[in-house]
Amino acid sequence: MILLKNISLIHQNHFDIEKGHLLIDSTKAGAYRFIELEEIPTYTEVLDCEGMIAMKAFANGHHHTYSTLARGMPLPKQAPKNFLEILEKIWWKIDKGLTAEMNEISAYYTAISSVKNGVASVIDHHSSPSSIAGSLEKMQTAFNNTGIEGLMCYEISDRNGQKISQQSLKETRNFLEKNMGLVGLHASFTLENNTLKEASKIAKEFNTGIHIHLAEDIADQADCEYLYQKRIVERLEEYGFLELQKSIFAHGLHLSDKEKEMLKKSPAWIVQNPESNLNNQVGYFNGQGLGDNIMLGTDGMHSNMIRSAQTAYFTGINFEPINMFQVYHRLRNSNKYIEKTYPNTKNALLVMEYDNPTPIIPENFLSHFFFGFENSQIKHLIHQGRFVMRDRKISQIDEESVLLESQKLAQQLWKRL
Image 1 (tube, rainbow, N blue to C red):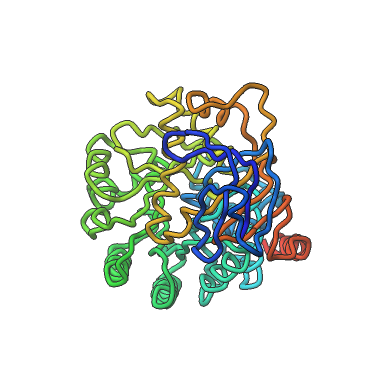
Image 2: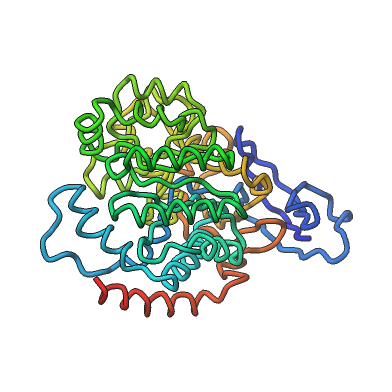
């Protein structure tokens, strides 16, 4: 049991603020309730949280654990001129260079980084063509050992030939036989019809959805129209992907009004990744016409969902009619999605030391969130009734060892490139 004494809890939907003594019950998957001090159960750990705020932990709707070791790497001799060259000269070389050991350490680092950013759930999209078999299981274990949830998938693609795509399909099936997960697909322009057909079979067999990059760059649409005489959403609909409630379409920048209407009518989800889009210069997200099923992700750039939401707002107000509430709703949609798979994540809490210069009330909470909140203010993360991070220190993993190993393997990867 954990008691957060004198904590101010900000409620999820209406932003009401309740102050008191919050008991977190480890015997009930971390369910929490306010109590009086005389009701404290035996063997309860008490923390005085005067001046601190608690709120539901975050979830990341689209991440790339495999990008961990790319940070700081030498740039290609010839700078990429467009998005396809970014993939060919950077990301597709990185993922081919990854070993099983690199996959595992990348997952541990991503899990740790997520915890430090108040994230208790990560939807990941993985690729390592030279080390496919067992990669998802090792990554899942890393997230579990760190104390948070990971919803994994392997990126199936035909860009490396049929042998690799078949291995990817096999890895997906093997993982789903024992774990909750998704059927990962790269993007329409690297996927042949037979591969989409096999992916559809697996998704329906295991009652799950796909996780695919959708029209991130205009070249994706151009390829589809040239080869198949149709738009990408129309192509994916033929394989039943839109009807799957767990399907995730990442990016969705270059969509027609018809495609948006198709997605709006489906139970599938779109993930906005604002900073990645800005970095790759592929365009700006406009959710107008897409409906309510929009989440936020980071696309492997980092694990900071506060920063992602703030960028989504400050960029978004220039390109679509949107306000702070709508962006915050997208942020919390990532929680909504993940809670369908892992219901107990609804109890995950983060605790912040926020030195607010003005009062926080329900009416101005969003203003504080978008103009004042920072990841450095997060002090504790509690999941399943246990500390995953306490006083900014990871509870279950030796962070220093992970960082040292990550730095060593990063240099090995860079040499291989």
